[in-house]
Image (cartoon, rainbow, N blue to C red; front, side, top):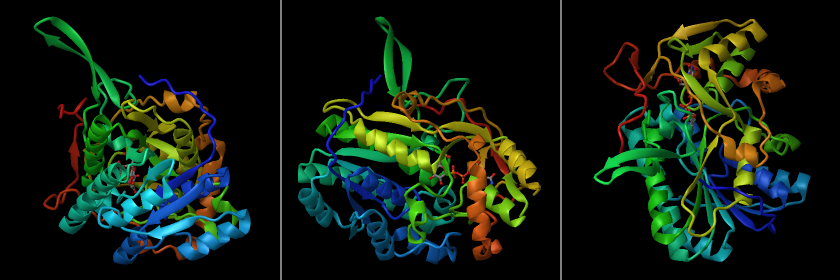
Length: 414
Ligand code: USQ
């Protein structure tokens, strides 16, 4: 397994692909604040999907121009913005890479919502072509431009599925023993992929792109398997109204903990899908940006295999979260029909030793930050469109009733 060490490095240039999104924007500010030159590459697709869905961030988000001007005003630092579609504008991206020669490229430029990816054929096809073409073009362009950048990718805990056979989910690689004619042999393989949506499936495919380009072209890659992000603000996004981060609460893009907190803030019964026995991994947005900082500061060496880290800090059962927030606020929860095909209950134990060893000090639910998120939710409650709260994207078009599966302990090997 990889042993990570801290290498103090001069601050270079970092490209943030997808730097207008929920994780990308606070990451761009955090890295700029640390002294990196930051170049955001984004085609503003997340804002366009808001228009398509008739939904909006609960927090009012400023235009990219206003965001960058506000950052310049409070920090004195300039972030460059390039409007470019990864997966389509290949030659422009190769030219940009050749010009900028970034030390690191942080790749968030993918459609990231599982429910949106299951909404219909168009959204499934868009998610596959957008995510896979973007990731492949980034790798292919790095080879074409001849840059030796460290690629840091935002993957997901969902590549593993959520059934563990009592195992602690390792950081990407599973040690196995196979029987051969010469007796038992020990191997390490990628933990078997077990995607739960078209979106998650694209991230499992990304892993193979990384495996291949790392093997063939010795590209240095860190793949971060992130849990469900909660929270809104980071110290940087809180510095000016125009820097505020987005807060999604709608049925397609809102993630569960932020949805519960926002629902509690407006007195809307918390929407627990099915029994609420689903256990998931979580991380606060402040820890997301810190993990990216740590990953950039600790690149793999040339020739190392893809470094995989689990970017999460706690696991929780959804029903426990709902009960906790309900107790805290007096707003009840409701068991609603689960629109997804997923196990009604699962255990989840995840290893995150590498980030802890590198100095991550996790933000926990107990740290009082839930109240901070609720404050944001209360402050902007007047912007909430309640008709956008229910989760209406279903996993199977022909299933009017909840569909529950049993998580296989491990998926069939790929
Ligand atoms: N859920 C509810 N009530 C709700 C919304 C969701 O009970 O109102 C349940 C879902 O059925 C599911 C769980 O909460 O069991 C998580 O759903 P989610 O929408 O919070 O998260 P998910 O679809 O898994 O996707 C999110 C991000 C994605 C990221 C992933 C990490 O959108 O980009 O990759 O979390 S992970 O879940 O660890 O795979």
